[in-house]
Length: 222
Image 1: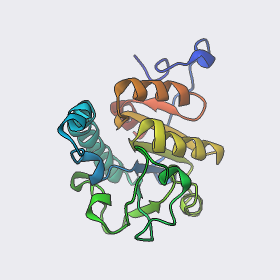
Image 2: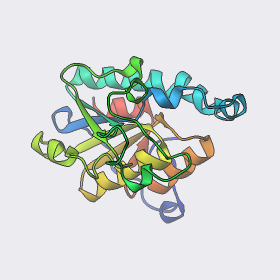
Image 3: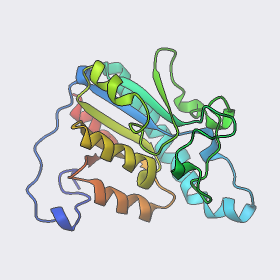
């Protein structure tokens, strides 16, 4: 199925197909969101690790290798590669947003220099790459990313990373509100479950972004 007809929600079930997408490398950035060591680590109990195994499999077999290819494709075409990762500036996490202080899954205490908070080695930034440190789900809220994108003349942003229904979605919505064109790469993103992943892509597609496969996105750049 083509990106033009996939992931249609109720709102867009009968909408016309969107126009072809052409991404100009000089005005396009790739944003890699939160693919950090902590999310690939085993959980506190064997039972919880087992529960998360489908996510680990998707990350290791699909998302990380595909994102590595996407990064390489973008670099070869002169597309700016930018990273966003969760990391607080205070060791006690006082500077975190409320969404990262609440108890439960989203509670994160990741001082910015901890190894657990670094980008996974397979996707590690190069020396001249921009890395945004954030204490919010959205990579735009509370950071200077919007200013950086505007200063660099960026008009379109390709998004990869995790979690589809949390930080990816929040970032996509913020980018759309700032009038950036956004493309989310289906096979370079993941949520805890495929059900959550697919559902969120259906929600954000066509209104906040266009959802496409890696091979399709490479085609947008050619």
